[in-house]
Length: 301
Image 1 (spheres, rainbow, N blue to C red):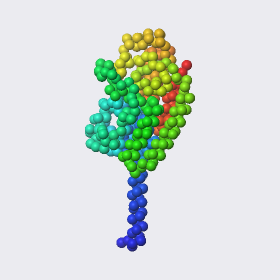
Image 2: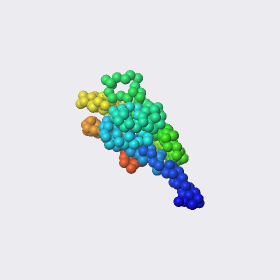
Image 3: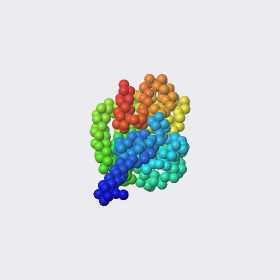
Image 4: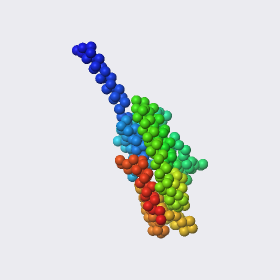
């Protein structure tokens, strides 16, 4: 039995503990790609527990909807993915089997980065004979730091909506990220201005946002159509085109086969630059940008 004074103190401690736990309870975040896992972690800090469904060494188009992923989605409070049909081959199946109503489309816990920016290369005609094209536009916009900034602001707002107890933390982290990221953009554009106008061959059309931002000039693509491996006939055609319209380097994502790029490199002496397509484990977005930009610069003749 409590005396009146002891009871008041005990109730005060209990209420303080409950408020503290509400403010610092972690929300579970399921990120489809490492770049969004890294961004969510920076914005959420101690208030989030983030899981990435893929790594930088995987093609995010083609992932198996494994039982372990279904279990992660089932426990998620927030889903953060690229959208624009990038995950169309596996995410809808995960969502259906998860039974988690909080992260279904049109729910606050369902966040698609593509919904908060303008996409490039939206096709005028949808025809599967044209290859693996995305109806909404090119989904590889995580190479554009300006779009990252837009997405960060939208994600901050969404996190605060589903977890209002930690609103102050999200707003503070969001402002800190925007400030540091904007400063980094200015530094990158000065530090890597030597890349502007550089002529490139690409393996897959993965770099359109990077090309636009840095002013790179794409002169050839190894794939005859998006997602279609190049034949020897097509590669010979690319080689002939490069004799008339030379390039300075060949860009390949780390997770892709570089066989065709190496063949072309042997014929042309062009360097093959294998770029990390996303954030490595325990790497921040800023560290990743620094890394792939330096790799590009090192390849400049």
